Amino acid sequence: MGAANAGTILAQISADGGGAIADAVVYAIPASGPASASQATALMAQENQEFTPFVLPVQVGTNVEFPNRDSFRHHVYSFSAAKPFELKLFSGKERQVVTFDKEGIIALGCNIHDNMLAYIYAVPTPYFAKTGDDGKATIANLGAGAYTLKVWHPTKKPAAKKLS
Ligand SMILES: [Cu+2]
Image (cartoon, rainbow, N blue to C red):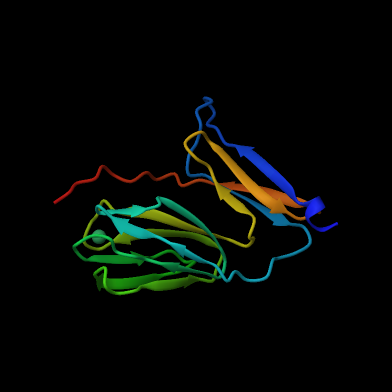
């Protein structure tokens, strides 16, 4: 019955000790099969010599822009199997877009600034959300049907920022 069947998943992710876990990606895969490819655009910015956000979940097929908001150049790369790529030294004036067309973890770094680290996590579903500092995430607008719920969280934290 269309919207009347729309569902919502509220997830709460916590560590064994009970502490809330931020930046976990929660996603629901429909049993009815894969969704059509994403037409979405998302942003992974560089600002104050850091990536923002630290974790960016996207649906497979999403175009991610890499705006450089700093006054200096960055050189963004990934060696990850899901999407190896390199955006050679670029400033804020150049538009940089990468399409993430495979499921998986894409760890990002910068050749100039060793402290810069972030993750793009490409999922095969439009139904995903990221936990906030309270460990909570909400996936809205689920259609009727069965879903498999999955969670991913990066284990590696960025090193302390050194501004130079
Ligand atoms: Cu950089």
